[in-house]
Amino acid sequence: MSIGTLTTKLDAFFAQNSFDEPHLAIDLDKVASNFKNLASALPEASIYYAVKANPEPQILSCLKDIGSCFDAASITEIKLCLSLGIPAKSISFGNTIKKQGDISQAFTLGIRSYAFDSEEELQKIASLAPGSDVYCRVLVDCAGADWPLSHKFGCSTTMARGLLLKSINLGLQPIGLSFHVGSQQTQISQWDNALEQIHDIYKDLKEQGIELSTLNLGGGFPTAYNAHVPSIAQYGGSLSAALEKHFGDNCPKIIIEPGRYIVGDAGVIEAEVVLVSRKNAEEEKRWVYLDIGIFSGLAECLDEAIKYPITVVGKEADTNLGPVILAGPSCDSVDVLYEKFNYQLPLDLKSGDKIRIHATGAYTTTYSSVGFNGFPPLSCSCI
Ligand SMILES: *Cc1c(COP(=O)(O)O)cnc(C)c1O
Image (cartoon, protein in one colour):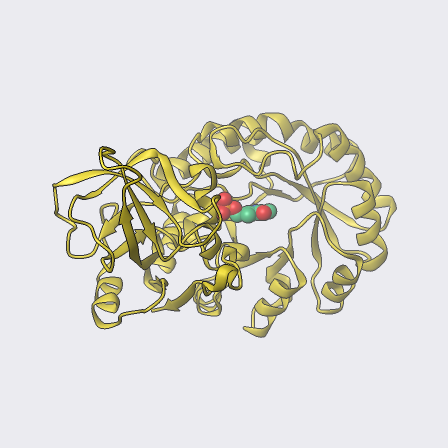
């Protein structure tokens, strides 16, 4: 399927349904096939879907049915998973910043796997979730990621080594390390770099009699927003080779936490053009205002980080195109989607035209405000 086209199911859905407000539709078959493609690209890994990418219950149930585990970032996400019959042992509490009350609740609900990246967090887990499995997130290079998670999470490898040792004295079970190379990471070698940085800890601790059973390679697997994204098979091959290079026959159990890759290209938003205008008559570039913007689901357009393919319904084959600046409907000047990147749309584009914003299944619905300026949050159908 080429970029900017719809699956048969999504095509039929939008042909049969029209919406007064922007609407996201998710093809669950595509969610399942993405999961399966990733599983076969990296067969040694257990997959923990990062719930935050899109927590629609039908998506979680679909993934549960095909063998996914889940990475939850909050007590609400944990409860949502449990309410769908996902067993507590298949859920990991992956946020390194947790309120005490939330750790206690998670422990009561049966969650036994927790991430940390600081001494205080480790102490909290030790007292509120005694005896649990813990893994330490390390800080790695996120260069090459379109949506970097930068330096907010993770500690140095030296600190991680010390904290893992300490966790034993606190009565916890240290299971290993985790890292995240940044979301939409198109530089595959960043996983190899991260493994280079951390593999010694597994050897060092083994010499001290501590076997770290698990290694969590995080998320970062990309959605193909454009033609330059390597295939998932290339990611799988490259990561397997890197694991072999750094661990040989002593490879720990591998976990990955994909979010974007699983749901990104399974979703398409249909929205509407509200106004096409020029700031002065001579200007070639038109301003195109949509009924969806930064505050109603397209937060990842900030700094033009994620560049979604955009098509106009009924004008997909139009070759009479001209440059546009795309903006949202709200009264906030931050609400400009694309100004630097040169989007081209049909010259006869006018208000009322329907547009499709492709590959918007990840990080859209939950990023939309509850109603800034009275514009409603992004609605979603799973089909
Ligand atoms: C957000 C997040 C993920 C998912 O990242 P993607 O880039 O969407 O694959 C995985 N793990 C953790 C800890 C996260 O915070």
